[in-house]
Length: 105
Image 1 (cartoon, rainbow, N blue to C red):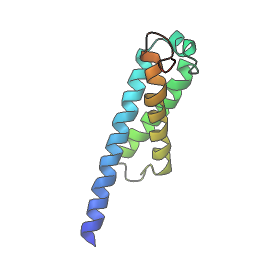
Image 2: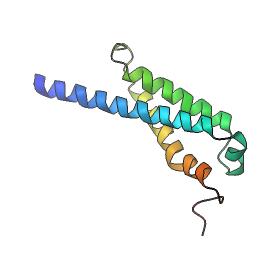
Image 3: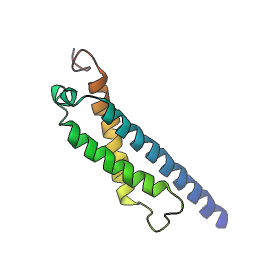
Image 4: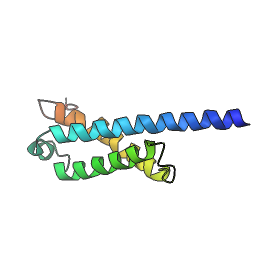
Protein backbone atom coordinates (compact mmCIF):
# COMPACT_ATOMS: atom_id res chain seq x y z
CA UNK A 1 0.00 0.00 0.00
CA UNK A 2 2.89 2.33 0.70
CA UNK A 3 4.14 1.88 -2.88
CA UNK A 4 0.82 3.11 -4.26
CA UNK A 5 0.92 6.14 -1.96
CA UNK A 6 4.48 6.95 -3.02
CA UNK A 7 3.60 6.66 -6.72
CA UNK A 8 0.56 8.87 -6.24
CA UNK A 9 2.65 11.50 -4.43
CA UNK A 10 5.23 11.69 -7.22
CA UNK A 11 2.58 11.79 -9.95
CA UNK A 12 0.78 14.66 -8.23
CA UNK A 13 4.08 16.46 -7.72
CA UNK A 14 4.95 16.07 -11.41
CA UNK A 15 1.50 17.40 -12.34
CA UNK A 16 2.05 20.38 -10.04
CA UNK A 17 5.34 21.14 -11.76
CA UNK A 18 3.74 20.95 -15.21
CA UNK A 19 0.96 23.32 -14.14
CA UNK A 20 3.52 25.74 -12.66
CA UNK A 21 5.55 25.77 -15.88
CA UNK A 22 2.45 26.36 -18.00
CA UNK A 23 1.26 29.18 -15.72
CA UNK A 24 4.63 30.94 -15.76
CA UNK A 25 4.81 30.53 -19.56
CA UNK A 26 1.34 32.11 -19.91
CA UNK A 27 2.34 35.00 -17.65
CA UNK A 28 5.56 35.68 -19.56
CA UNK A 29 3.69 35.55 -22.86
CA UNK A 30 1.04 37.97 -21.60
CA UNK A 31 3.75 40.41 -20.49
CA UNK A 32 5.51 40.48 -23.85
CA UNK A 33 2.50 41.38 -26.02
CA UNK A 34 1.47 45.05 -26.36
CA UNK A 35 -1.78 46.10 -24.70
CA UNK A 36 -3.42 47.41 -27.89
CA UNK A 37 -3.12 43.96 -29.46
CA UNK A 38 -5.42 42.41 -26.84
CA UNK A 39 -8.21 44.89 -27.56
CA UNK A 40 -7.69 44.70 -31.33
CA UNK A 41 -8.19 40.93 -31.27
CA UNK A 42 -11.24 41.17 -28.99
CA UNK A 43 -9.62 39.29 -26.08
CA UNK A 44 -10.43 41.62 -23.15
CA UNK A 45 -7.60 43.85 -21.88
CA UNK A 46 -3.98 43.19 -21.07
CA UNK A 47 -4.61 44.07 -17.41
CA UNK A 48 -7.34 41.45 -17.21
CA UNK A 49 -5.11 38.70 -18.59
CA UNK A 50 -2.13 39.85 -16.54
CA UNK A 51 -4.20 39.59 -13.36
CA UNK A 52 -5.54 36.16 -14.25
CA UNK A 53 -2.26 34.66 -15.42
CA UNK A 54 -0.34 36.32 -12.57
CA UNK A 55 -2.71 34.93 -9.98
CA UNK A 56 -2.66 31.49 -11.53
CA UNK A 57 1.15 31.53 -11.70
CA UNK A 58 1.31 32.52 -8.02
CA UNK A 59 -1.05 29.70 -6.99
CA UNK A 60 0.67 27.13 -9.23
CA UNK A 61 4.20 27.95 -8.08
CA UNK A 62 3.14 28.03 -4.45
CA UNK A 63 1.50 24.62 -4.91
CA UNK A 64 4.61 23.15 -6.54
CA UNK A 65 7.00 24.09 -3.72
CA UNK A 66 7.56 20.96 -1.62
CA UNK A 67 8.25 22.90 1.59
CA UNK A 68 4.85 24.57 1.43
CA UNK A 69 3.10 21.40 2.56
CA UNK A 70 0.47 23.43 4.39
CA UNK A 71 -0.72 24.78 1.02
CA UNK A 72 -1.40 21.89 -1.33
CA UNK A 73 -3.37 23.91 -3.89
CA UNK A 74 -6.15 21.46 -4.57
CA UNK A 75 -9.10 23.10 -6.27
CA UNK A 76 -7.27 26.42 -6.70
CA UNK A 77 -4.53 24.62 -8.61
CA UNK A 78 -7.15 23.19 -10.97
CA UNK A 79 -8.57 26.68 -11.57
CA UNK A 80 -5.04 28.01 -12.21
CA UNK A 81 -4.46 25.25 -14.77
CA UNK A 82 -7.72 26.09 -16.54
CA UNK A 83 -6.88 29.81 -16.71
CA UNK A 84 -3.43 29.31 -18.17
CA UNK A 85 -4.68 26.70 -20.65
CA UNK A 86 -7.43 29.06 -21.86
CA UNK A 87 -4.85 31.79 -22.34
CA UNK A 88 -2.42 29.53 -24.18
CA UNK A 89 -5.07 27.88 -26.36
CA UNK A 90 -7.25 30.89 -27.22
CA UNK A 91 -5.62 34.25 -26.51
CA UNK A 92 -2.01 33.48 -27.43
CA UNK A 93 -2.75 32.28 -30.99
CA UNK A 94 -4.93 35.34 -31.62
CA UNK A 95 -2.21 37.68 -30.38
CA UNK A 96 0.51 35.93 -32.34
CA UNK A 97 -1.30 36.01 -35.67
CA UNK A 98 -0.44 38.89 -37.95
CA UNK A 99 -3.51 38.85 -40.14
CA UNK A 100 -6.24 39.21 -37.56
CA UNK A 101 -8.39 36.25 -36.59
CA UNK A 102 -6.45 33.10 -37.44
CA UNK A 103 -9.57 30.94 -37.78
CA UNK A 104 -11.45 33.10 -40.30
CA UNK A 105 -11.86 31.73 -43.82
